[in-house]
Length: 319
Image (cartoon, rainbow, N blue to C red; front, side):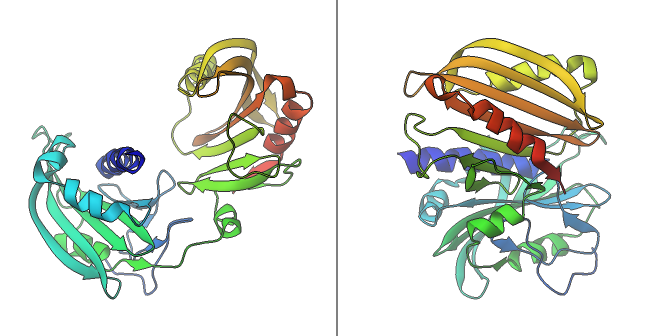
């Protein structure tokens, strides 16, 4: 049941990412932390917004979502024409193929219907489901009319390369930011190539918030205007469905080292464990995006932990 819920969520994410002819590179290019690499045409480059590639002039993307190896069989069964159509992908053909040597895969072709206007054209779309024994991949390619050729997009997908799993250290090194001072925290997991989960203590899996956690995530999208940042920060905090009953102790904008910041410190209740917690959310704004840090600690352990959260956050350097 847990795998099924994970698969559904990941499938929806992959299809959402997928909504958003040239000379090929000689060697495969791997998005940061991804195990799936490609030989993109010269007018496509790794995206800063998601795990995958974007055409430099717009109009074409290739996005990648990685899942556990045992997800392939369930996805292959659940990727019916009806289910994919419900996600906005009208399938016209599907084909069982081999990729990366002798890895089972299924290639779906079709389109995402538009409104028929220049602003909302019908989008050509491909989905490659890859079932390597060590990882499952959902790879979505899409393009607006004339952005690329069908051969370019299909060739990029079916020419996929799969590399061995990266170590945690390699994944951290590939993040779009560098942490200069960990203040006693350590990384335990990298998510989507742009986020890292850190903790302080011996356990990698934390139940009932036995240890404080800190998540750092880089977002590449236009930041809100200065007058909207307090509302933006509060909405981001309240969107966390694992906590409830927020009581804000402090919410403030400030400028430090020439950079705009917003910080919230609040009390809340951890929903799974009903444990009182203290939440620290810091957002550092830049012209082309923002870095969000969310730290959570049990209320009876807040002590110096909030100060350590700030030590880590203040030391982050965006690459």
